[in-house]
Amino acid sequence: MTNTDLMVRMLEEAGVRWLFGIPSGPVLPLIDSLRQSSVQFILTASETSAGFMASTVGYLTGIPGVCASTVGPGATNLTTGVGSAWLDRSPLLAITCNVASPWLERRIQMRIDHQALFKPLTKASFSIRDGRVGETLSEALGLAIQEPPGPVHLDLPEDIAQANAAEWKGHRRASNQLPDLSKEAADAIAAALKKAHRPLLVTGLTFTRVSAARQLLQFVETQKIPFVSTLHGKGFLPEDHPSWVGVIGRARRTNVKALTDRADLIIAVGYDPIEINYEEWVGETPVIHVSTEVAEPGAGLNFVWNEACDLDRAIEAMNRLQTFANDWSPETWQEHRVRLERALRPGGSDFAVQAVIDILRNKLPANGILAYDVGAHTHQIATQWRTNQPKTLLATNGWSSMGYGIPAAYAAKLVFPDRPVVAVVGDGGFQMTAGELALARRLRLAVPVIVLNDGWLGLMKVKQERRNYPLSGVFLGDPPESPAHYFGVPCRPARTPEAFRDALDWAFALEEPSVIEAFIDVESYSATVFD
Image (tube, rainbow, N blue to C red; front, side, top):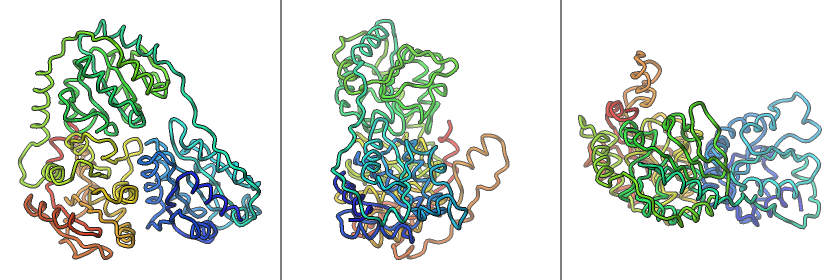
């Protein structure tokens, strides 16, 4: 048994089902070992997409997603996808297949210092130079899933990969146990609720990893308080609940902030400031931060309680608190939601992004998964889309890299082959990742890709407008007519709401991938994205 045979066996035992990447000489031993296993090698069009797909698998399953690259340019391409796992908190293993050990310190073709490259993007970087493959991989698997989860890098020289494996009896390092501070957290919340007139709950990225969501909803109902979430927190508390009042920091943020500014206490449960810093929206309002990591202090912030703890136990203790009266009125929340919905749809165009979102939401079943890219539409979807189910919206927030949407959608379809999955991307992001359509055709992944085609980098256009800059470097060109297919994947255009509905029906009826080019009006973003 070679070292790559051992690695693949250990990945199988850990529950890994796919390894994403692109072949090269140093990668071939790993691919050959995969051929004899249940772990499927998924050939991507770029290493960047391989990283995004692995990050998505890690997020959806809790089992580290795995991606691999060759030396040098393959490794640098991989870093963009690994960065998504780093700042979006997904368990991942990034394997760089390197030159043979005698060449590791030489200045030769393609070679760079992989560990220096990955160090700022990972929880740890290991170079397997002494043949301790089993021990190192076991440590990496354990570290990737420890709270907060994230990527771990393994650098594998080619001679080590092909060498005979040392005996490995096998063990996995247990995930770290966070302290039980449930009593302290509940006591702090109770004391604050006694004095507060308008408390507000906010959830975020860390809340997506708890199992006590139902108990937190009961806390909301018992205390009769409103709640908001971040982009990542959507769906983990139901958005059709009367206490839901919006998503912070996204489209029509001023509408949402008008209500959050009325709060005199912020109870942040599972909030990760990597999505949006507290300083950007809470001001001097007292904050109780209950999460798995301590929030970094900032100028003007007023933390009443700020500790890292076992989040599930803290929520359970919160839910046992008595009811405390406050001055909120459910009618206030309802009036706010009506104003927000109206402001999200400013009118002026028959076919703008708002219409695309509403039509798609009506067509996609409740358990359907929407993966969306980075751009102006990110802000609109985050606020306008409604979901009551966790992990049905996939986006990158902490990392916020264009090119995420299509690979994430395809990864989701691999994880959930029987559920409908859709990707929404801007025309700029589509240009970056259109090559992955060949992957979908090869694997027959029945995922419609909706391209919001308006001829602009819409988010940058709005930013230039807001800063009174002349528009420059953001025009992609007048959109051409849609082709019959991209890389063999059939394509249909849509220029009206009616045509878009028909195109969705066509795409959902297919048992293969598809592309819908929605030719929308770019100007509608100017009235919603940053207002």
